[in-house]
Length: 394
Image 1 (tube, helix red, strand yellow):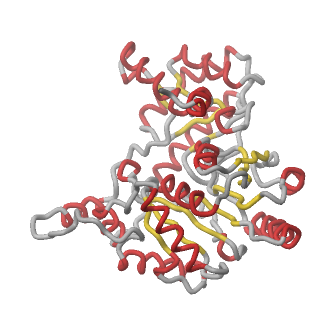
Image 2 (tube, rainbow, N blue to C red):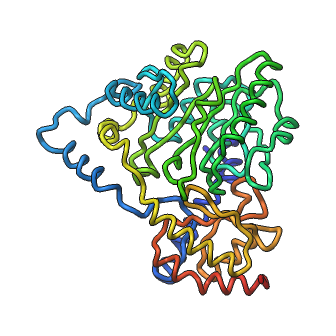
């Protein structure tokens, strides 16, 4: 009954979920308080107070019709608000006709790939990357071309040059990045834009720059997050409110396409059609309305930064090598041995749940998600000390 491709994909599926499931077993054996689960990027904070109040208002008995079908693109008034915000951020003439509301960023990426990919088309993906990207591309007949980044986890133009072909139709980037926490600077985006424009001229077809931005509000020390719309003509932003409003389970996000794209209206028609035929139909109607009044709300940056600083301090004091993240809520240290999978499995004996870098196409590293309680982080220190001692760090 199981398709051959699904059999293969199951064998190569997410290490994140695998470690989370391992955690369920450990919690049953040792108690939740004795397991240090850093596997899943699942915000432990409740949504902001304004979000919760807005939810109460929307679900009051007097607010009728809120659970009905909406347009496949989403409520017009909500799309207009998002377009207005994007116009301010990018200085481009966004309208509601450039925005479609989606079932989270994952739904948005699938809608985008369904709309634009022909069988055999390639999408360049920069490693380390969120593992599901590859599956999303393959869902729609495309081929993911995985390209390593440089030692700073930034795009390596020379590596991209080696791997790109005329079949490339899109490049997907993620800044702030999961898992490294790196934020791409203006200089990085300028260099990438120059590369893309040169390849568009060489191949005589557009290459869509897709920017996956669920962490764009989660940055530290006021690190700027430049808008990709300022550098790329053929560009789409895919975003969600899973991290910024702590609503990962509600599946609400959007796609915004640059108004400078040629045949923008046709692309938008395709996105709306794909949103319907993929079975999403429309983004959750209740949460479309909710986000409309909460677009300026932000995650608890100071609290996440406190967790980052404590955990980063622990690890570096113990001898782990790690780039200090500028955004998101992950650390991506080097594994003390080449086999990051073996290292992560070794950590389980101390009830430490980590994710191997191999799960992000970057073997030799491991990911720690610090969107967990401060208490868990503090109590995990002895476990990390034992782990470091086993590998004779420092």
